[in-house]
Length: 362
Image (cartoon, rainbow, N blue to C red; front, side, top):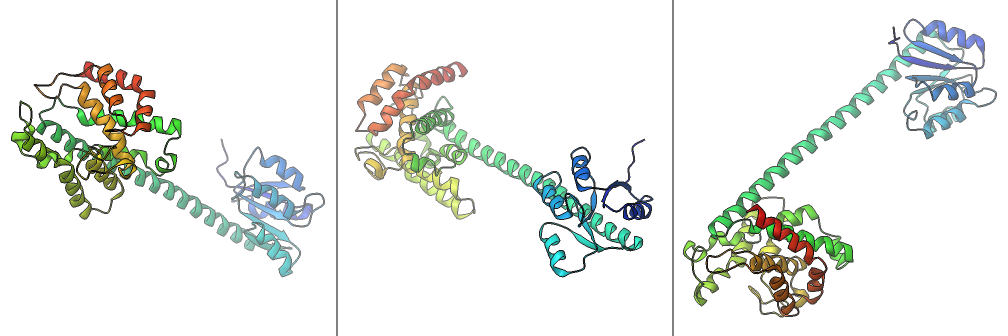
């Protein structure tokens, strides 16, 4: 049968002190006596005690040296150590406390006082361990709650983006597809160390979540225009272009009612800038070159590629991957940033593979 008593290491080079200490404590604790520090340290590696009673002045390793060895090892660093000493000077006591001793008992010691001091130190140890366990459990609860909130947020975003897809009379999945293409481009940015100083500041999870809202402004566009079976008139096209500013306004309204603004800031950038063009002829603001946020310049490629290879209108056929790539190349320096077109060409095979998977999944 295993002894369930707490384990006390008693270290003293005087046999009489080992005997007195063992007799005083053996009824309540499992006492393991050592006549040298070296012997105790060697045993410490095999069996960890709950508390150590440690003589300060011993031949060979003294109490201070043993303490330093214990505090260097994470397994032993938090074991309570009570020094047993014949010295009663403040300097010696301060030295022991400074290296981690939890208490001092002067020899010759009183057995009842020794037991009470041990009781107190073990109670403190138990409370510290319980608090550590509670903190760990609390962190688990916080992590679980955070995960639940994140799942809820993603579900809301997903639902909003699907509503936009449905209202836009598309074959569905535009948001998911552009999000996937965007990820390929951003992974390539990392690989090629392009715009590293900007990308390093991004929280990637928030970036990909916020990209789902890039077309949210279409919620405010008239159904007759969104669901029109034929080509749009010039007036209708001017109206649908407003989805960028409408999206920005929708997200700003959400931001007024929440403290979580970081991913919404990115969402606002995506909504407002993904139709801007490198040469300044895009909308809604006609931004030019690097005045267009990097998020918008990247999403512009993902968005146009998906529009080209997807048959999202009854009057429009899907282009082949090769033709879509050709159009993007032809738009280098006009619609798209030249460096990002080169980046796209380095991963266009991944775009083709993914677009094929999306077509199979329809």
